[in-house]
Length: 155
Ligand code: UDP
Ligand code: MG
Image 1 (cartoon, protein in one colour):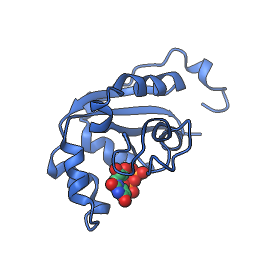
Image 2 (tube, protein in one colour):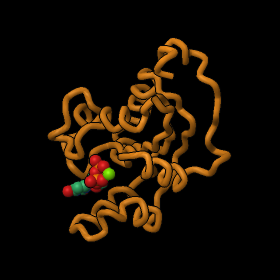
Image 3 (cartoon, helix red, strand yellow):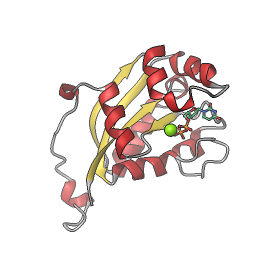
């Protein structure tokens, strides 16, 4: 079982609705290690890269406008199988369909204004972490409660 890093963005909708602390707290309490954390204002260029897979969609400009309407909170989370764990915690894209208990399920009624972005696989996690963080912004601090979070076999 691999220790993975994944990228999370708390979108402008989360920042405006005063959900930053609450959502960070959910990840902290889960046991994920916060390896990096900052607030940034996204721009058109970053978003064209980040959402390149959606460039031909009719909602692309609307999505970019929504993602630049306020700063976002970007973080790198680490844990065993963290990419999948965080995606599962995030929930379905459309907040109306997201399971209760997931972050989108709890906080979102919308497909666009769905509060959070999380990397969807190993390749995208690596690319996205590089897109938003310099190496020196990512900290390798030791999680002293690690032995309480995992069995020896898992970690
Ligand atoms: N999105 C949207 N309308 C759609 C599909 C997606 O506004 O029909 C937005 C939504 O904010 C979503 C983002 O585009 O989070 C990226 O879409 P993706 O399909 O990658 O969904 P995600 O991985 O975020 O669940
Ligand atoms: Mg996606």
